[in-house]
Length: 342
Ligand SMILES: C[S@@+](CC[C@H](N)C(=O)[O-])C[C@H]1O[C@@H](n2cnc3c(N)ncnc32)[C@H](O)[C@@H]1O
Ligand SMILES: [Zn+2]
View 1 (cartoon, helix red, strand yellow):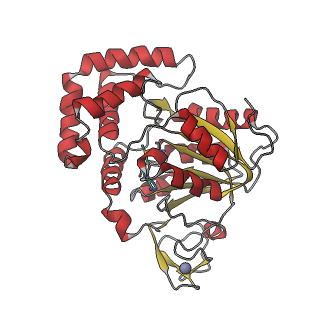
View 2 (cartoon, rainbow, N blue to C red):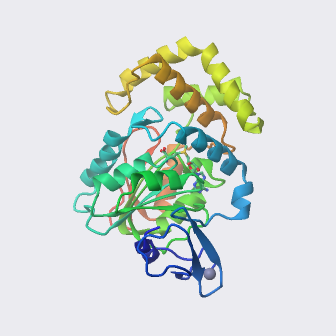
């Protein structure tokens, strides 16, 4: 953990400032403790990552499920594509879209940026590389964050293990928040969205992707069919190693239809979404299909959000919204004077 991160951290119990209980003079702390002088709470820093998750978080099904998934993924190392998207052009497209929609709101030196639910950290690493003068935070419950923190070792990259339902962050610190494929996996999308808006600064921007409603997009509708019909909505009850084996079996049995559908979809999709990755080998496609199938089946919560529901939520939070017209994508700016800027 870089000492600079102290500027934005607070105690998750009482929201008061934290200080270093050990090694107060080091700029990078690999092992240590954070102390809340107000309520006496202590939080470990382990392998460079400050840890704010609670015992209840560790018992949660989604913690175990995503932990299993990220362990599996980290064995493959960090990849240039994740969930069928090439990361570098995808993240740069997000930044350009935010900038061109809300121009005059460029990211400045020392602005803080957040990847909320960063998973295996490819996107926040790219965010840090694309904005070397800004400070970038990757936050997730993922217990494997330290692997990505250590290997990437960027001077402006920070990581926090915490629950989005109980953020250990000062209000209003972030200039930009992105959260891709995360909020619908928490017990309450609206609550977590509001938590994110609370840590966004005035005129800060938020970019998120959520599962679209059934029927909005052919690819997602196919995944919902897999989860709801082929696995009868029961996959999250299956032990994780058995589920992984079933995903291999499922993809093997359906390989050619899945391959044909994916190629057809990616080709069509690439016209609006140029960073849909191209599979260079059948093996690469197989691995990605097994991972995506597991990712679709494992989570306990997987809500699909109606567009109006999220647009209303943005209104409620006083977030000015831009219509991206792409299934599941939302972009907004906090406390802006105008309402719609389509
Ligand atoms: C589908 S993954 C997406 C990861 C990443 N955003 C990406 O695009 O590759 C969802 C992530 O949300 C994280 N997550 C789910 N619930 C969370 C919570 N309550 N607090 C923090 N992270 C959470 C999971 O650990 C997982 O890494
Ligand atoms: Zn406290």
